[in-house]
Amino acid sequence: MKLTLKPGREKSLLRRHPWVFASALNLSDEILRSAQDASGSTVDLLAPSGSFLARASYSPHSQIRARVWTFNDEPVDKEFFRKCIRAAISLRSKLQVEGQSDAFRLIHGESDGIPGFVVDRYKDVLVLQSTTAGSEFWKEIIADLLIEETGIQTIYERSDADVRELEGLKPITGILRGTLPDSQIPITEHNLKFNVDIAHGHKTGFYLDQRENRHRIGELSKDREVLNCFCYTGGFSIHALAHGAKSVISVDSSGDALKLLEENIALNNLPADRHTTLEGDVFELLRKFRDAARSFDLIILDPPKFAPTAAHAEKASRAYKDINLLAFKLLRPGGILATFSCSGGVDAALFQKIVASAALDAGVEATIIEHLSQGVDHPVSLHFPEGAYLKGLICVKSSQ
Ligand code: SAH
Image (cartoon, rainbow, N blue to C red; front, side):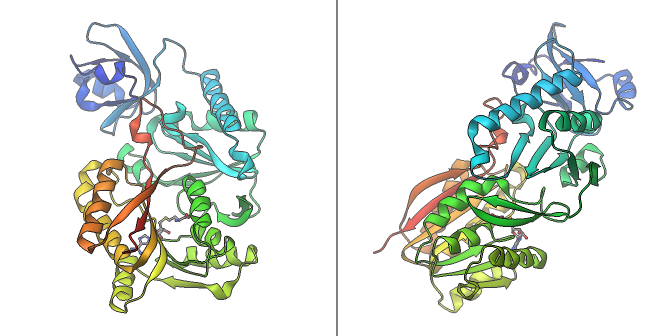
């Protein structure tokens, strides 16, 4: 099938952005009818002049109607995907992430040239997430290729992200290849152990994108009283305790995550008497701590995605401001705030503005000492700025 771009709407493809919105395409009734059965199949994208622009997958139900596989006039087949997978594996080997952890992202969707596919490696198991009609179309072939190219025998599927709904796809989870005796996999990150539940945990089981930041903030935790908000299975808490934090309070609304956190403390022989687990809502807890005049030396805020897209930015900004304002109040003079946003709809500049206005309203002076982002195994294609979703700031509250 060939689809032609409306005049002027070919510009983003010429800049090599991989998404084509339905509004940019000339979709005649005839094309729409035949495309109904073409979910995920490969289409040619043509300029209004008729010249070839790209080869893409077709998503009949999504506003993002096509996602580019290649800007070259080449076949999209098993060997094409083998090349993409080899490039992704080769990049990871150059980044030396395997020296820091036996769990890392092997394929990061658009940024690795394979839109719709995320593949994370947890030791000898791959966890695959497919989110688009195109990735669904090629899933079995990609699974075969992953086994051929990595030598790993087990692939577990976690295609249960909400975004699949926009593509008209139902959630699918379970074993895709091989066998899995236990859904909990003990991984090592910077010499610390974590039990990851790939079947029931969030995303593919672990927030791999925070690996470097957990290590960095761990280093800053020595002798400090730490409050880790939105702690999940304890990533930042374990690193903080291992680096000699005086005490750590970990807060999350998920009881299952907190259970794993406690297992992870034991797994690393860390001093449980320096740690407190609190199950509850961070927004409420920060207020309780404020009313009780509690204070901390280091506060970590790593909330879930408040703004999946720019349309949610305003509401999300209020939520980010709320928790950052309360955190600034709870910090002792000279204390450190490590604050994150993984919202695609809030970019780094807006996030910094929100944190600045939180400090202003809290009546505190603070300086940024570090800008943080996602780990190197989550690369960002220069042509796909949306790939840069995680941003973090380490701020120091003035000691005056
Ligand atoms: N920092 C973690 C990842 C945090 S993910 C790590 O390094 O592994 C965000 C977490 O926020 C999830 O565990 C989710 O259960 C929790 N959460 C979401 N809303 C919450 C709320 N209102 N109060 C407390 N926890 C919340």
